[in-house]
Image 1 (cartoon, one colour):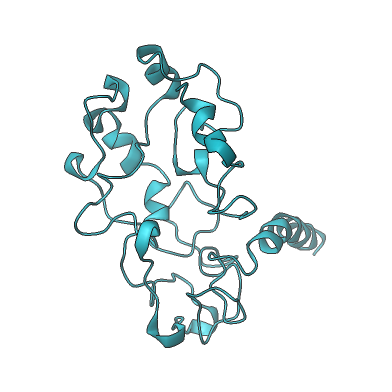
Image 2 (cartoon, rainbow, N blue to C red; image 1 turned 90 degrees about the vertical axis):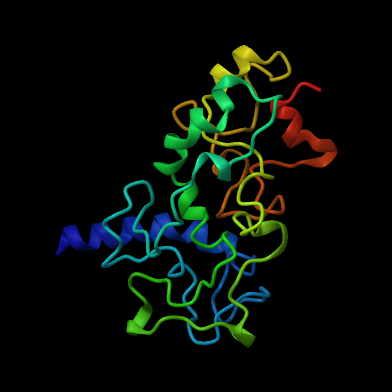
Length: 216
């Protein structure tokens, strides 16, 4: 019993900061949220991405994940440009991206319906959404059928390798988070905090987020 209680306390301590910071942000899909896209039958805050029980066992890079993942990407789906270093080219990063948590982001940000998407829906009832609006649109729709990720910032590259080939990249950007040296969505975005909208990891006044990496 003591072990179970300790685990419950640990989970509560882990969950509380995240819950406090996403409340009433666009990532709060609960029915009591003030967000435009929100459920009309589920008022749990975290369940749209996480579940404490019966979580997906096919995802190993997200805690207690309660959704599917976006589809596998191809080279033609990724941003390409003559200005990219070899380390950042689609063919060089494709395998890294398909094995990363970027596809977790795409489970919502792909322009597809979010209804019926939970692995373990609360009470066994899948969420429905207010006014039937359950699809991310606009700039947040990253994987639309026309552009895929071809018009979005490249990810999946080892930053040090890219910086070594590009004098326009700073050697040690401050405020940008890398994961085993690789740039991901979470390098620039913090899904649990909207202090710097839209879910930016740091303030971008005067393009300070961009200039943390790009010496222009």
